[in-house]
Image (tube, rainbow, N blue to C red; front, side, top):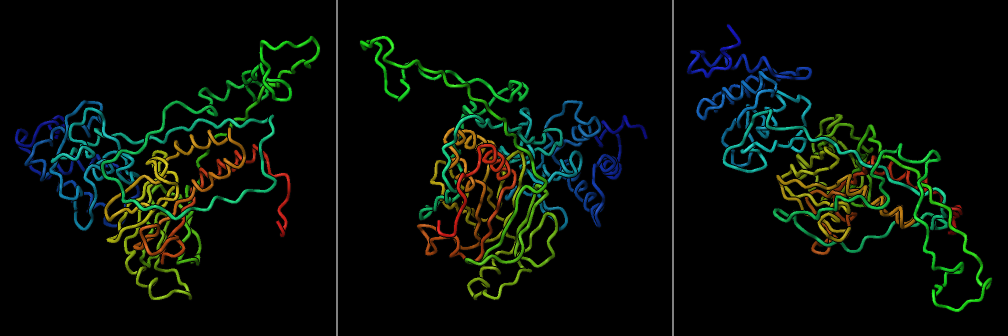
Length: 450
């Protein structure tokens, strides 16, 4: 059979449905086949062909797939379901993710990794009655490259004699995940501690010159009036301060992007979990944990009371974390809400850093943004050692299951909730550590009586 017939609709070529399905399946891109994956892929294609025979679009879909997107094609749409998901056999997923994974990116994890092209009129995010599943109407979201933070190397930092304690949270405010309110947008202009050019623009000694200081300040800091009558030689000549040199500290992506610890009230339970894959599910089931799943049901605790036991039974599907495009997202998979405390996202929305946000079932929220953190880090460098050290709190996210805490709840601290997790973001923490190391160390050791 000539490949020329693959560009003709079935009604014109006289082809049955089976050849169309076989041709479409022949272009699928899959990783190592798991058990049952081949049959599921066939069912997914059959389901799509059935829908497209009613609405049209088979020709456009095949044209897009066979040309690898080289030929411009129109939207290929199917009706949007009530919850936006498509069920194929026993599995549910977002339709554009299913078919983008099938024909373009087999390692695709979730819809946060996709962005529609500008010409797509029925993109999934537009929430129209029909949704476009054309794999070549979506592009993969790329992780932005963060500019280096410039740390002064030849000035005396205002460092405390010992490491300062992290500021204690006040009684947290409570909010519900905003639906229509856009988050606060940070300016695109880099703060002063950013260097917009490549690192090669620095001088050979690793530094760049700073502008000279004001010329109307005396050596003791008193203003000198230009009209003052001063006899020659009564004021010592000013020495121009040496130029400030900077060291560029760059961000590096670690092998494990986050570490998760599980707590029941004040007690840490079990070993921590380190995530290497961009998608991590934390649930209440008892299957042995894998590289993309942390099951809390297996963990035992001799101090567990009936309230904790009851709460654990309601964790069920739990929460899914995504790390994509320099952002961390949390999606509530459970039938009960989750409660998130993220100082980074709170700043984006203009909330108090300690605010606890309720995420209802089926909803998701961006809980950390690398670019926002880069802005905060660059600005804090100019404010001294303690300001930088305080950003440690920005790199920690707390999530409680089922039970909330804060000013509107009976439980006022996270350690009063039955089941909760603490997420440490390794990339930002390591970047912060490198900046603090470059700034120096506290000069006095910590004693038992300090």
